[in-house]
Length: 289
Image (cartoon, rainbow, N blue to C red; front, side, top):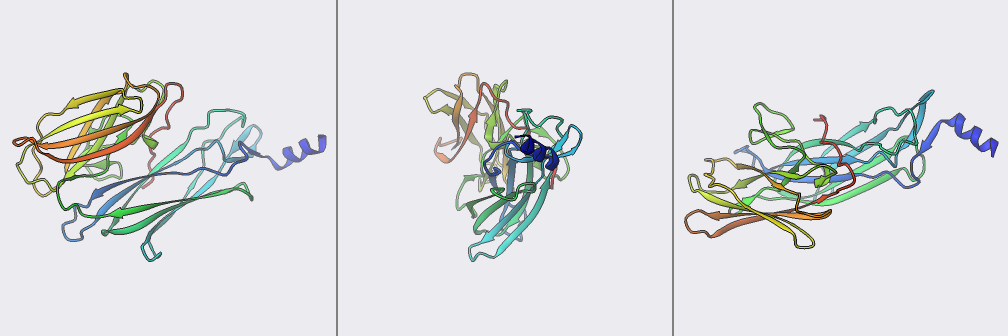
């Protein structure tokens, strides 16, 4: 036993869990503003829980983990359309038994022509030689809408704020702080969100209806004021709904757009999220471009 303890002390490597590292990928698709090169803008939100990572001793009472995240978007024929590698180094800890090891998040924005793709993420724990890798894949379709349609809905950690200038965090004239995994944690009582409307005829007012519902049937409904579409551009939509009447667990936000004159439903969009009454949610995505 003494030899084992000595070996651990000499190597200075500590693993929080025996399982492999985890990688969470979220994708939001928007239409490109480029009128010449048709396609979409893909926003990839990456969240890496640091609990499963291996921590190595750097100095007395100083421990840190390290992980490499490889992201790629593959065309239908398997050839890469885009790829990038990011090295993550969580903050140094003075005690590896600390249970609160905050997840790390970052955001990438990629322009793609319309088509069918596969998003692939690979995470590698740099301090673990076995069981230290995880690969996640999900299908991705980028297609121009043939009629009125929403972009994907993005859940936000705080209200969208008016902003000027270009940034990976700016869209539609707003600064957006994403809620990783669509998760709202302890103390959060409002769900904030952003989406865009496409292919609406200019100067044709529409009405919006919002429904936020939990799996057990509790729901919140709200109507928005009339919206007049922008000419030749997607129409940004921001909103918020209270979470206080919803229990812990998953919920779904559904947005419906109707013609203001005829009341005909033109399009709907749905996105799921979750609420916890005990755990804190991950912080918003950090500044990697």
